[in-house]
Image 1 (tube, rainbow, N blue to C red):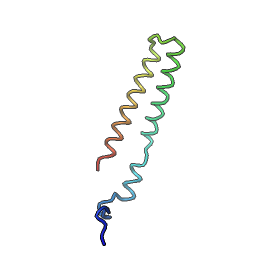
Image 2: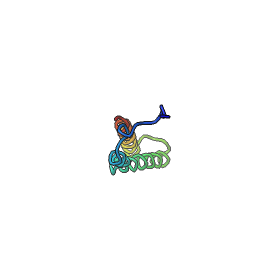
Image 3: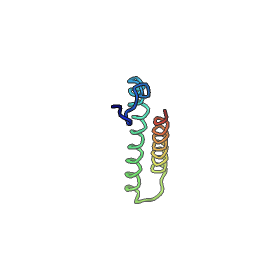
Image 4: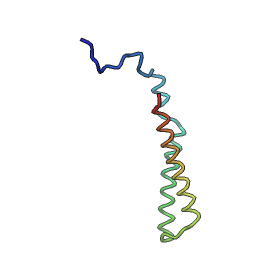
Length: 80
């Protein structure tokens, strides 16, 4: 009896394609930038009691840009 929910082997991604998407140095760098940007932003805001400063502003922009790039990378990786 055939399984109607089984994915035929020709429709499955190859092992090379799965390994290619598994992780990349760029994504690792983006995660590091996101964490560093958030950390520096929190420390800058705590040190200056929430006043706007160039260090916190720059760290926030870097963190948001890294987050947006991670989301774009994730969405592009899902497409067949």
